[in-house]
Image 1 (cartoon, rainbow, N blue to C red):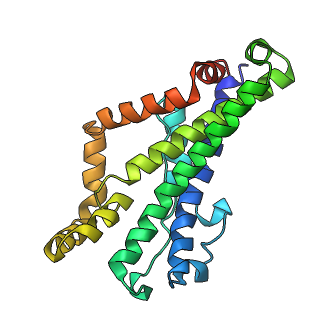
Image 2 (cartoon, rainbow, N blue to C red; image 1 turned 60 degrees about the vertical axis):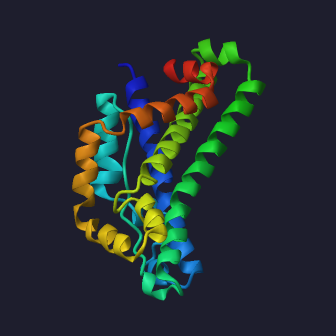
Length: 230
């Protein structure tokens, strides 16, 4: 039995979970620093994945996507935020919103930095071709770091699209006039339908292709080859 596909599924899900958990914790922690204790009181300022797991978005959807060989995507239970605790609710939501994508970018770049340093140190040819436990383990680590980088970067870009309830809509709302703020808030109930339709129609395919191209440049051909060899 070839365990490589199973290993890739496990590593991909293992990369999805911290990406979405840290994203949500960043929202809650920023809100807490701005005076909102809601997330803390509900026990959501924890890195324990169990507190943030959404059975569908955190487990089922990523698992199905990995099995289908598609791009991995997922989500956690949103951390509750009450903007009434903020001195300026719209400004507070701006800071809360950008904290999630910024955290994902930081995680993605950190994974890339670690991987690039490791590639420069390890004997690349041996890691690429070895059938020993060390060779398989090394390729698995590079696969995990690569998927972690890709997922975090895609989550950051996707969440900054200015459609409610994505984080980008909170950022845009802050800069809109009063009437624009009302319109964005009124779209909140239809947001997921709009996003799902746009994803189905591949409206963002050009944007995602550019992001993937940038990530591949950052990873480099050697790293991508290591991931493909797992």
